[in-house]
Length: 360
Ligand SMILES: C[S@@+](CC[C@H](N)C(=O)[O-])C[C@H]1O[C@@H](n2cnc3c(N)ncnc32)[C@H](O)[C@@H]1O
Image (cartoon, rainbow, N blue to C red):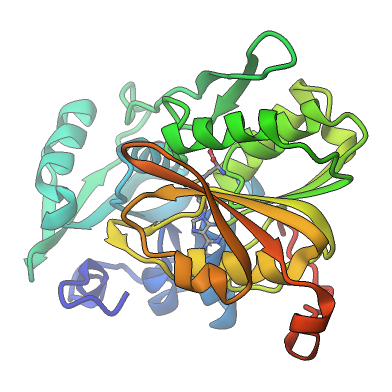
């Protein structure tokens, strides 16, 4: 958030916020200045807000019924996620309430505001426009017949060697919501060839659950812990686990990679790690996940990791186990990490404390 052209700086400009409590979606800087509530599906943001003693929830379902007089939506990289937030904010406003929309030119705030103006059939009021960012407002009329167009949940088919492809859902705006990621597909084919019979599987950065859920179908006696930092993805993963009949055998948690992992001792860890935070390349969450994988593997256990070929993960992975490249394609590489034997890792092994990181 300390970016040189951080659009959230504009929130403090005169005339942007009124004195009344604010509903804020996708950020918390406004609620820090006024009372109110923020909706933060990314656990790292939610943790930051809670550390500042702000009222924060992962989704809007946790809100009470009272409408707000002002709601602020942050433009995100995902248009679908942004439009979902705009619709939620619009529906939560009282008549005459203001919908504030904030973002930087780099993410396309100008075209996003034009689209919203068309959908609401209303000219925006520009409240602040500087430092390559802007905040605009729209007013909610009595009984509005228009609202921001909310994107649909997507339906996808997961390849599964044991039978017909598995149908899953992906909430709009989550990772690879419209199409199964090619890296995910590569790891899924490695699952088919994986010789072991794991009892305990961890899927770190599980998204909508593609890897962990197929693994549970493949090994009907296995249990899985699946974790992701995006509450929208977690909600889809929970519904997918129910739909595929494996919910009893998995624990799905809202977890940020910088937190300790609440379970230990996996036979198989599945990893298709993130390498972006917002638009910026950020390898830190992946590195944290590698550490968690190293800490969690039982002696003899394996982590399967898929990554873009160009990403320099080898050194980090070699620090936590024995690394092998299983396959490479034009764009991806598939790596296998085996935990070092106890004697070589014993004194440095770190056991994370058990801590609840379930959705709150
Ligand atoms: C490349 S996607 C893989 C998703 C899924 N495993 C698959 O293969 O389809 C990486 C996942 O990591 C999650 N993620 C990103 N940053 C995270 C963080 N700091 N902590 C936990 N999960 C994170 C994203 O929400 C995303 O679902």
